[in-house]
Length: 357
Image (cartoon, rainbow, N blue to C red; front, side, top):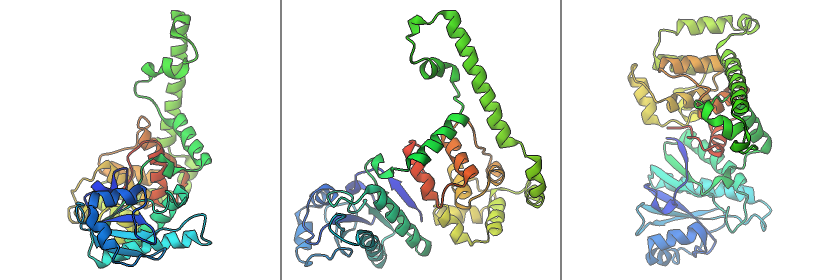
């Protein structure tokens, strides 16, 4: 099952266990720790007092009492300012919690960004460690893991990457209602009353022409096959042409075999749950959602031609009029990501739906 990053109150998540970012004494401090104790009721503290505390980097499990989940897994996070090895201790926190969840037959567990509050651990560092440890665990185990974030500050992607993506969007994204955006987007420095009607008409015409030209360039870049590249890709194109009459499932497994990975690796790299993958595997006519198809394209690191081919078998395509699609196209064209979670960080920054099913 996949890792899902969500923005929600951790005490209200429907799952088997939630993780409490506590301290060595297992005594409620503030933030999520206090909220969890308040929602669970006084019996949680009474139970914790009998456990004899918890070492930094370790974890202990208790009943959830009034919470909707079955268990609360308490972990003592590291203080960023006081330890020589805070990253190592944080990795241990996530590993120990996942182990306890597995040992207690939990199928779903929700994590906060441990130690990112009063303990001063940089949120971006916590996010990187959390996604790395959890994704490694999910490669060997079946579990649905929620990573709960409270705001965009956790996703502080590099300024260069943000600017690169923003620039790509600016160059590629074509507003569907461009005419209604012209005054707001291009003439915001001019009060409407100061523009003569003929000036406004002329400027509108100019902007529309520029956007039309931009759209043509983008579409040609997406659809045209460069002759020089064609010579280098003859075998690839020939293989793809043989797949033209195949459905989504056959095409997906063709690319999985081409990448030399197992089925399990394929759906886990793509952050797709086992149930969805089984439907695809068992039913040759199964039509996945566009999000699922794109998740596989990113997880398998398909190039633009391969992605276009895979999407087409399910009746989809990437559109320059859809900001989500444009961001996906950026990562496919540049290959500027290691895992699907790198792409999700950027999608989150631009208020787009995250990959994974």
